[in-house]
Amino acid sequence: MMLIKQYIKELLYVHECVTIPSFGAFLTQSNRAYVDYEVGNFEPPEKIIGFNILLKNNDGVLANHLAKKEKISYEKAIKKIEKEVIIWKQRLNTQNLFFPGIGEMKLTYDKKIEFFPSRQINFDSNSFGLKPFNRSPIKKILPFSDNKKLFHMDNQTKDDLMFTPEEKKSKNPLLKYAAIAVLTIALIGASYYYGDKYVTEQKLEATKIAQKKIKDNVLNATFDLGAVSKIELNFDSESNYIEAASEFNYYSIIAGSFRSMSNAEKKLASLIEEGYNADYSKSSPEGLYRVAYGRFESKKEALKLLNFIKYTLEEEAWYLEE
Image (cartoon, rainbow, N blue to C red; front, side, top):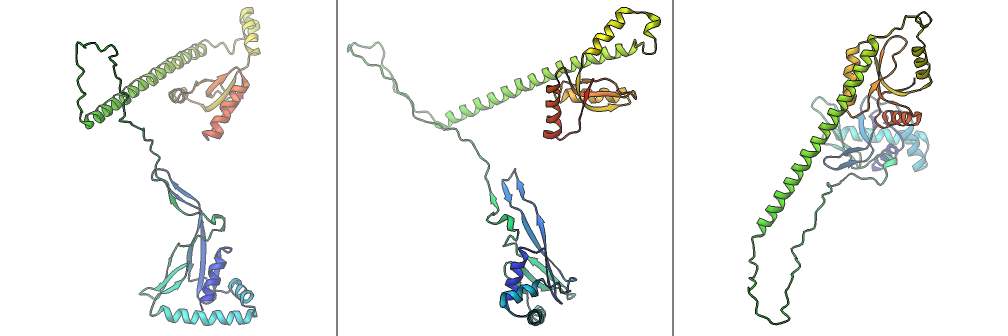
């Protein structure tokens, strides 16, 4: 009965598994949309059909659907399916078995059923109307006109001219295109050279600034009097400096904390090379060296950078108020 095959196809739109008692089960697997940007191919989301010969127990899905469609009892529907399965098994011994829109079956040499999905129908109802297509890369064609404005000299006074304009000799059009190609290549090479030179100079300048900051931090760490009591030394100027500094806040976006100073320096150099205004932040209470994507006097600017790194670049970072 072709109707049973049609009922199977209808059920595959809404069920992930449609079992045919004593025969096997059709299974669906959802695939996401696929886009190949280089070639321009687009494949919509779809359901891939497979077949499992081990799932033979009746789950009632096909029988109930057949009973409703043909307005018969569930028992009669089961008997119809059993008769059809017997015919399918006999046919497989001599020829292939086709399921329109679903696929094709055949017996292997060891008497096992091999299924080949047709993929002519997308059983994903959410992708109804969507079809694979190919989008050719967009090429910008610059219009070129061979028409040129001709300038004429009017001899209104009818005086004799000291020279006679010669007619412009027609040149080979290939030379004209070759000249345009050479000029285009020269412009591209020049822009690449000067652009690369500018980027290199900016990186060198950023590296110099980073090295100066690293040296300043090293000097500060060398002369750190952390354990010395301010009261014992009675340095009023130093205490005034500390109070003034504590009133000023920095807002840092931390890229990582490191126990080794060399690792912190490597991370700092890497961030500067990527174009960040990277800097060292306040060390952690455990003595870890903190490297920041940037330190700001404005909390708004710091949070703006944090959102960009976390949600646009999807990289790890966290906010620290010093």
